[in-house]
Each structure stands twice: as C-alpha cells, then as structure tokens.
Image: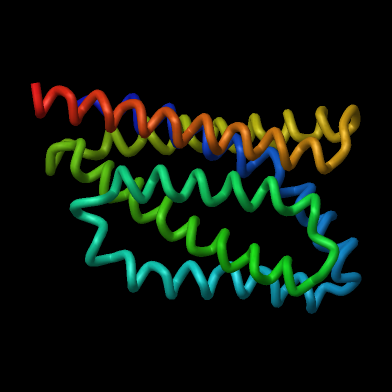
Length: 184
C-alpha cells in the first residue's frame, strides 16, 4: 500500500522538531538556570506523553489521522508560544501540551503504518519510513545550526511552527481527498 503521504508528512514534522530541539535546550537553560529544572521539564513532557497515551489508546483506531493533525497543530501552537514564555511555570505547561502532542503523533504514526501496510510485508515500508524520518531529523539539526547563526532562536521557533502546520496540512489534505473518494 502507499504510505508516501505518511512518510512525507512525518518527515516534515520530524524536520520541525529536529530543527529546534538542540536550541530549545539552550532556551530552557536560560529560563531555568539549572539542570534539575531542565530535568523536571523533560520529565513533565514524558509523563504527560505516557498519561495521554492511556486516554488516546482506545480512540486511535478510528481517529489516527485526526490525532496526527491535532498533534502537529498543538506543537505549532507550542512553538509559537515558547518565545513569549518568561516564567518557568509556563515552560512546564507547554511541556505538558508537547507531551500530549507527542503521544498523539507517535501513536498515530504507528497505527497508520500498520493500517497502510500488509501483515508479513511491513518491514520494507517501516524501513522506508524510518529512513526518511531519520534523515529528516539529521538534516534538521544541520539546518537549525546554520539558521541559528543567522537568525534568533525566536525565529527558529516560528519556522518550526510553520513546518508543523505544513505537516498538519499534508495530513488534512490527504484526509479530505480520502473522504471525497469514499463519498464519491
């Protein structure tokens, strides 16, 4: 089956996250001024992701594409909000949002990979998916490093938000086309 749309949309999302993540750490360090505060922020991210996965799990089979869109839009909102954060408590709240979006994205991609492949023949499709999303991640770090020398970290957050929205639009467009094919 054709999973090119999933590979493309999630490569864009991976580019968005990889482009900001190394520099996001610097941003957090400037707000928290301690590694323990960074550790707490990251723990809030992972724990909220774990908690959200329990709520999302029964809803995944029927709504994976919608959750994939919501996750990208939520991450875009977080990226837009980060440059405006002046308090550590807001960092923690954004970390909760990002953890929830992470659960939506990771679970959706896995469900959609399974839905769009045939049992016993998933290996090549999963390998293709992993190759392109991993390559996008590596490329993103390079792009982010080059851009941060020319731009501010705030602009990098905004560019990341635009890429997240582009990823959401790619899935939404495919979902709309799929719905038209079913109706028509």
